[in-house]
Length: 249
Image (cartoon, rainbow, N blue to C red; front, top):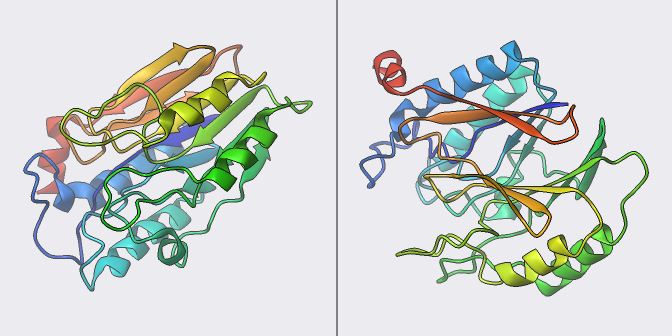
């Protein structure tokens, strides 16, 4: 399979203004999402993964319109998609009134995709914590390696590894408990997160590959193609750089 990924567009279109963080180019993001989808179509992606922070300001009355803008573009691209909510998006129940809530487990090609779409920050907290029932479900799912599954790809918004909490909590509050389950599994696991805008290249830790996608809304505006066809998952990154600024004006 070929899998397209972009994360953290922090899009503003119907919502006025731009991000309070200068480097987040929220008003360029409709163009960036459109061109990223074109890139995935050109590369014959079989699946799209978007690990959260679709929009920049979920508190504004026009936030749902911005969510629907991205949902419509993905639908028109015709690529099946797994989209999870981030901390800048509405709470999962509201978010999945616009996007399709992914099944907990999706088997496609030689992969199983496992998604924790219920993860969210509690009101007044900055870090998410995966619930006890979700951890137990995760442990049960990962205890055996099903026939025909070569790669298990786990998708969430927040970081599990490495620790990137300097000045802001990017990791799950209980990331050690999540890692313990993943690293104790007999499966070949590739973990995909967003949330930490600089991104973190895929790195192996105790047999699990952890990858954090860089934010589409910040220079160099990255998007990725994962290929699961080989013995190991390979990755291609393409960036817009200054070209996006020219096209978005």
